[in-house]
Image (cartoon, rainbow, N blue to C red; front, side, top):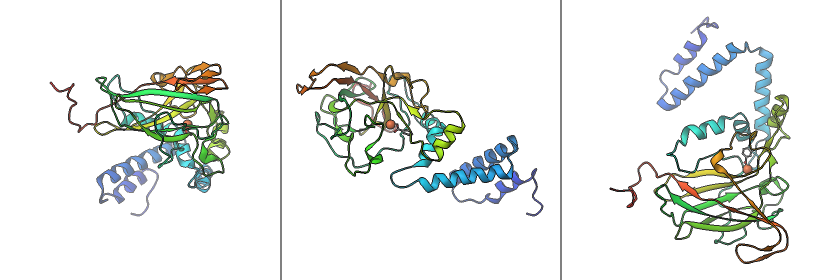
Length: 296
Ligand code: BEZ
Ligand code: FE
C-alpha cells in the first residue's frame, strides 16, 4: 500500500496481518497496534520523544541478564503486572488473594523439612513462620508444594548478592493436616532496584521505589489452582504506596514481636524474634473433581 498517511496507517497496519496464523497472536497484536497508535495521537508524540522511548527500552534490555530482569521490573512499576494478576486470578470470596510474582523467584530452591531454617544464614532478625494450607470448605491440603522467598534485612534477595548460595528461600511440603512451619528472618521494607532505567523513570515521575515488608509464597497442590502471593507486615509505612501496587488488605498479617527467649519450636533464641501465623485458602482448579465434602 502506498501513500499511507496519519489517517489511514492504523487500518492498513492491521490489514497487513489479516492472515496471521495464530488467532490469539493476531488479536493481541491488533490491540497493541491500535493502542500504540492511539497513544501517539493522544499525546502528539514527537520524533525525539519516540527516540527517547526507544533508547529507554534499549537501556532496559542492556541491564537485563539472568540475575536482573528489568523488563519485569518495568511491568511491575507500571502496574501492568498487577493488572494482569488481577484479571487472571478472580476467585470466590474466602480464597487467599493473589499478588504480583516479582523478578526474584528462583526455581529449584533448596528443599527443607518442616521446622527447617530457610534463612540459611541470611541477615535478619529470626522469624518463625507457621500456617495451614486449606481448601475453601476448610479441608486440609496435605503435601502441598510451598515455595517461600524474601529479601534480607539489608533489602536484598540472595541473587542480588555476589555469592551463589541460596538464602532466605526454599521449598517445603505441608503436613497431613495441611500445616507447615519453618524458620526464616523478619521481612523488612526494601526498595525495588532503582539504579537502572526503571529507577530513573520512577525518579522522573516523583515516585519512591519502596515495597512494604513481605514474604513471598507460591503454593501448588493437585486439584487446586496455583497460588502466588505475599504476606505483608501490619504497620509497615509503605502499605499504602507499594511501588508495584501489590498490597491487598486480606494479605496483611500481624508479625508478633518477641523478646529473646524460647521460640515456638522450643529452641532458645538469644535475640529478639518475630512469629507469623498465616493460613492459605486455595481455589479449586476448574477441571478438578469435587472434593467429597463438597459433593452433594
Ligand atoms: C518483589 O517483591 O520481590 C518485587 C516485586 C516487583 C518488583 C520488584 C520486586
Ligand atoms: Fe519481594
